[in-house]
Image 1 (cartoon, rainbow, N blue to C red):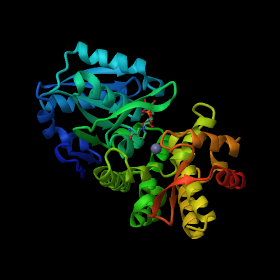
Image 2: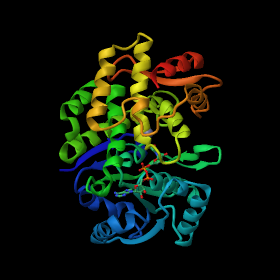
Image 3: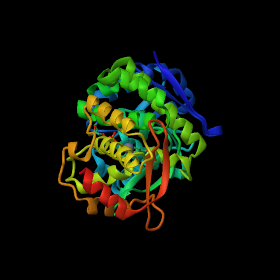
Image 4: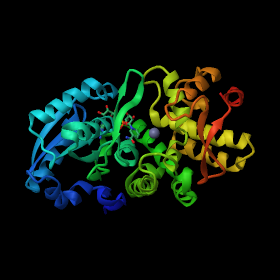
Length: 364
Ligand code: NAD
Ligand code: ZN
């Protein structure tokens, strides 16, 4: 069964279709999105041999011819060079503003393709077909697109909402377990921010939540939660920042660890645990809630502290210095998402760096 979650943004509203067979279920909608009966599909060299044939066949069944563009896999593709290559390829195919381009891949392909769609001829449509769990629950929904620059990750980009998101869980059967667990961190994040009942459900399922129908349900819950926040604050002037729970710590871990030593979701899991522990240390969150978060992360096989990350050589001062550089901070101060309990996250834009260093020194 396929679940459909709406993202309500007025005349730019769209659906996220989720589950095993979501691609086939979406087929009747495709002719309306591809009026020229052709679809340019952007994907990468890992994904093309695994999944391009199925996508091409479903589109052919809907009367749409496919024209693939295969990029190099990896974060380096999310760059000015990758953008130039892709925009050039789209223009060479004479793409028109009435058309849409498909992003078939993980967050790298989705972010790059969305940005290319936003700028090509001042904006063509795009459809997300996410193939990693992270992309299905997080990056394909909400309209943030972009590339990395020499100054930092995602430093150039645009808000550009997709026309449709097809999160078919059959795609992630070819994903390594470590990637699957890492993507799950963004699911548990949603529950911990604002949905205690969802957390209870995920916690009761334990490690079973990583597969089958429980996973599709969990993806749909996380997407519905994100959709709700995006509908209220599309451009992140306020509440949307809650989605950064665990992420300020995570970005510091990722910046300090050797390249590819830890997955983003692993850093997020440890960051979430730290956000809860820091909230407890400030006397603002019951310790029993932080205990439940850590136990759940352990059950899933995710890191549940800085010490359980694959890289361990952390320095509190260096981590906090990284956190001060976060692009979302106001001048000189650190913004952290803290929790008053499970499902009760809030934004504190005035974290004292010295206090945070002292806390981290006791928890690394
Ligand atoms: P990714 O896109 O690099 O994919 C990870 C690897 O898995 C790649 O090698 C890819 O080729 C491979 N792969 C993808 N699907 C596969 C499949 N089904 N089977 C086998 N291999 C497969 O990484 P990701 O974790 O999906 O995305 C990370 C990116 O997402 C980062 O650049 C991050 O900044 C971005 N992101 C964006 C948002 C947003 O709101 N736009 C949110 C979160 C993350
Ligand atoms: Zn994330």
